[in-house]
Length: 164
Image 1 (cartoon, helix red, strand yellow):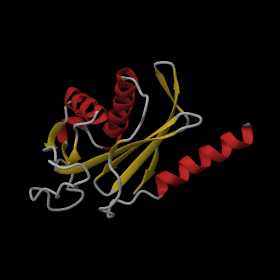
Image 2 (tube, rainbow, N blue to C red):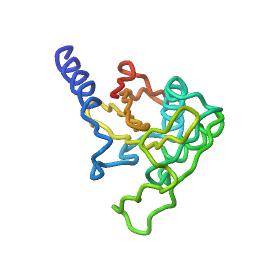
Image 3 (cartoon, rainbow, N blue to C red):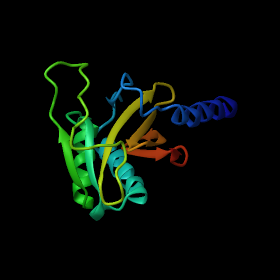
Image 4 (tube, rainbow, N blue to C red):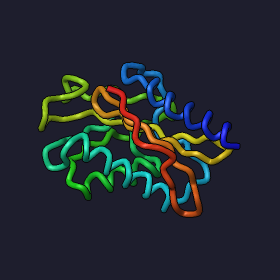
């Protein structure tokens, strides 16, 4: 049991290192199943706490690179705005599977401090044990963390992993 848990945690840790910001074919959005609205809100709140360590809220504008119509996206946008971030959302796409084009208002992946940062997310799940992984794509970086569902709580299974 301990060995399989260790292997699972290592796989989760290394999967955060493989996330590529330049790959436009990557999956984005919320692919978790069976998570409650309270669990999603906890995940979004923890993601915003981590983001506030990377970029100060009052001085950073965020532009989503994907629609935020799923439950995690809605919770994340709400938590970002409550924390003091200026947020520009992408309009919902007419057809599922279509990737939004990058906005012309952002000239690079990561702007100067006080500028606009592109942001995206991926929430996916390993079925057994039910570990949910949250990955934020911020500018040219990505941060990843895994969570284990315990009732309404989402307990982190490790620290945030950052790829620059």
